[in-house]
Amino acid sequence: ILKKYSNFVGFPIFLNGNRVNTIDAIWLQEPKTVDEEKHSAFYKYVSHMHDEPLSTIHFRMDAPLDIKALFYIPSFHQEKYGMGRMEPGVSLYSRKILIEAKSPDILPDWCRFIKGVVDSEDLPLSISREKPQDSALVGKMRKALTRKLISHLSKMMRKEPEKYKDEFYKEYNFFLKEGICQDFESQQQLSKLLYFETSKGMAGELVSLDEYVSKCPPEQNDIYYLFAPSRELALQSPYMETFLKSKREVIFIYSAIDDFVMANLKQFEGRNLLSADRSELNIKDDDDAEKDDKDSSDDSDVAKGLTSSEATDFCAWFQTTLASKVSKCKTTNRLSSSPAVITDNESGALRRMMRMVETSEGGTSSNSMPLPKQTVEINPKHEIIVGIHRLKEKDPMLAEVLAEQVVDNCLVAAGLLDDGRTMLPRLNDLMLCIVKNNVKEESGEEDSKKES
Image (cartoon, rainbow, N blue to C red; front, side, top):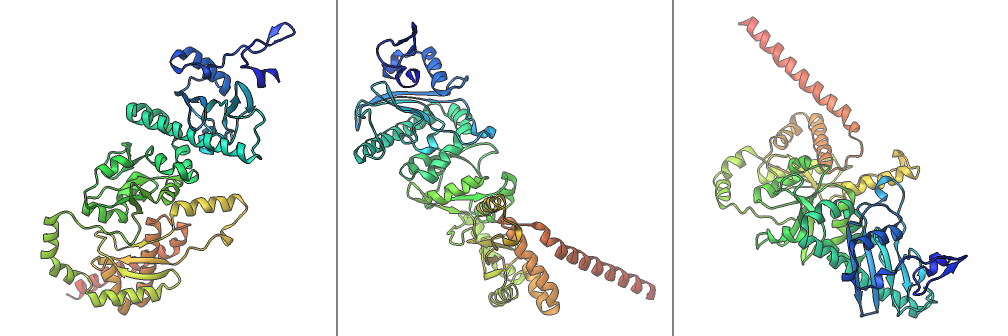
């Protein structure tokens, strides 16, 4: 009890002839006077770890409260090793007397990786969360400490970018993202600490949101992002086609927590964060020469693709034929090499995460969330769409099977198809149809040769 609550009192305490309080309260000393050796020893004492701290935050402030604090960022955290959720790592003192060990109130939950102590003479020794005045004091302290911590990370990001990226961000980015989803007061400040890959960078090259915005053309008012399992799949996604044509940069995100971050953040520096699968994207091609080429080839494109009336007819047929899967079908000019995409859909990453939670709670595929009807945007110039339009009169059954495959392909591209094995019977039927047609053509050629 003496070691726990009175280890740092200003006079020696002896028990059975032995001094009990042997550690100095170095957080009360001037930050410049504490050397690395003292910090190393104290860090190991408060953290019960044997590594060296990645970064030290030792400071004092007079407003809004008298606060003396000493924080350490460990070189690693234990949650990644499957050891369960960490407890808060900062203890609260008043005049060197312990008020609460591992206090959950003085820092937000996303800061639980921080180790250290906070001391304030403005706090009564009998502080209680149930007293409104005491709760208000702790709330003020919490805001001040959180601002100081974020400020320290921002400074590290500017002055030690390699250390920040390679050591801190690599180890602790999950906690920052958790903070954006939970700590709404600090959301915008935390968003400045994030890094992402983009479509214009190299694999593994990270940029901040501020860096992304600095490279945007003046007319771009939104920030675009795309979720995909990997960089390769992101670059091959049909949603990227319009951005590649317009030379717009797109942020790539690869995990469910990133998707959740973007959905919660919504804006950055006055710019909307828009997923690449949204239908309301207003992107114009910046390449004037390409525009001229398009204008000059309009006649040939129309000849190859569906006319306006044919496209309207096709969309009506598509929506009616696949009424169980499609809520709306319309044309789009965002595609070049893909026949169709679905837009305004739910997040594939979040859907998979919810299915994992459902399965862990004993759910089965029979009672899982049904996939809602989708909005499908078709490319009226694509050969597949043109071919299905021709087939819907000649061979309605085959046209319907192909249309259904187009929708499932769109679901795969959006990461929404729960089980790809559902497509196998249809794919087998399509392959069988192709084989039979080829066999018929070959047999017809042989017959004509014999006759001749």
